[in-house]
Length: 327
Image (tube, rainbow, N blue to C red; front, side, top):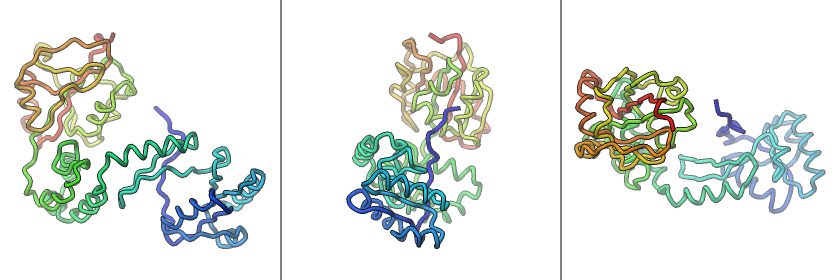
C-alpha cells in the first residue's frame, strides 16, 4: 500500500486561540491566515500556556530563538509550525485555493512551498470561480434530493452521475450551479449509462493511468472478466455492484483502445453508444500494461443480458484480467 508523508486535515479554529510568535514578514502571513480562518491570534507564550492553546506558529528571524520556542511550545502540548524549518514542524501549511466553501489545499510536506504555489496558480486558471456557488447549491438541495431518492446508494449514484465530466453539474462548467435545483427535482433528463473497458495485465494498481483510476472510483457496476486482482478492486467504490462477466470469443472486436495506457476518444452518455456503433477494429497495444476505451456495439450487444435486471446502472466498467498480454 502506498504511503503519504503527512496526514491531511482541515482544522477548525474559528473562535479559538492560536499562538503566533515573531515579528516581521515571516510572522505576518501566519497571523492573517489564522484570522482568515476565524481564529484569535495570541502573541504571548505564557498566556497561551495558561489558556490551553493547542496550535503554535513560530516565526523568529533568529534560528536559535525558533529552536527554543519550538521546544517550549511542544512541551506545553502544542502542535508547532516553524516557518521555513520543516524539520521542526509538527504540521505544515499548504498553498490554498479558495472557492468558499470549497477549499483545496496543496502541500509538499515542506519540500517546496514554491512548487505548491505554482500548482495552485495553474489550478486557479482551470477551476471556475462559481465552484463555491455549486457547493452551496448542492448543500441546499440535500433535503429535496433525500425526498426524491430516499436510498443513500441511489443518491450517491445520482450525484456521481451529475458531477462527472460532461454531466449536468460538471464542476468545470461555470454555469452548473444554476442547474442544481432542477436536477434535484428530477427535471433534467438523466444521461445514458456509459460503458468502458479496461484491459489489465499487471496486478499493481500503481500502473493504472489517472483516468482508469478515476473510472474505478466512479463506476456503479463492475463486470469482472477473469480473476481480477484484489489490489485493483480495492481502488473501486465499496458500494459498486460486482458481477462476473465473459464475452463470447474474447469480445475484443470493436473495442477502441487507448495508446500508452490512455483513453483515446472516450465518450460518455449517449456519445458512448455512438462511438460503439462505429465497430472499429481493435488496435494493437503499444507495450503498455493497461489499455482502455469505450466499448463498441459488438461488446454492447453482449452486455444486454448482463445489464438486464440492473437498477439503472450509471457508469459500467468492464475489467478484463489478461496477464498473458503483458509486454
